[in-house]
Image (spheres, rainbow, N blue to C red):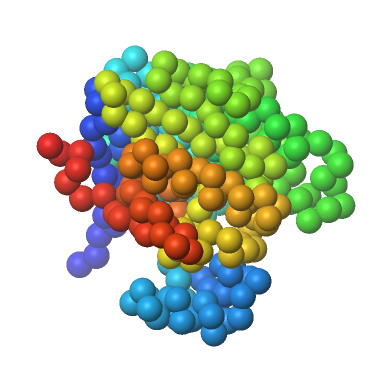
Length: 290
């Protein structure tokens, strides 16, 4: 017998808000040093992976959109890969939304950390708006960069076309975010550029409890957090991305608050402790249950 199981979901309370993380899928990447630590030797990357009990020749990259239910709003943070990934077992956020007890029509806000395809692919479903009653919260700098025709003929052209197809059709329903702007009560945007020019992180506070949704600020719990200065192939401005990783995770470590990282090991929520070369990742366990 065989059966298709629903995607993994994980729910916890943050103050009076309910946070549900959905596993949109996962991919296996060969040769980790080609993506993380691209300015290091392959043996240096292999050694760090081995020290952390991880395979040295492959890594798993997963995707974790989130649903935040404040009681007055249902907010989707990033939408996953969408239909384009389903032949490869990806794009499962829509299933997960329903498995978590929500309908697409209940979503009131879609907040996007940035506009890469694995974050905006789920905005459309069969050519129509996937969340028909939602408004959109998008970084002003980010949107301006990806919609600019100056991207044509550059390495960013594919991303430009993706944004024109998946994001631009909803421009009239968008709120364009700048540093410190509020998305809903208790949820604010912070600029965290480098991975993309206008990448955002979102700070959520509910009844005194806090969570930072860090998007792609750091994309591997060892190779990015453990060595935040190592270059990452997918970072637009690698030096700026490294500075931003330090800044954002210095703040998270100093305040001892949890974060949700889009590509962290599912359920993608944890804490960081500052160490000499970077940060030690501590995955969530029962902290939110007591």
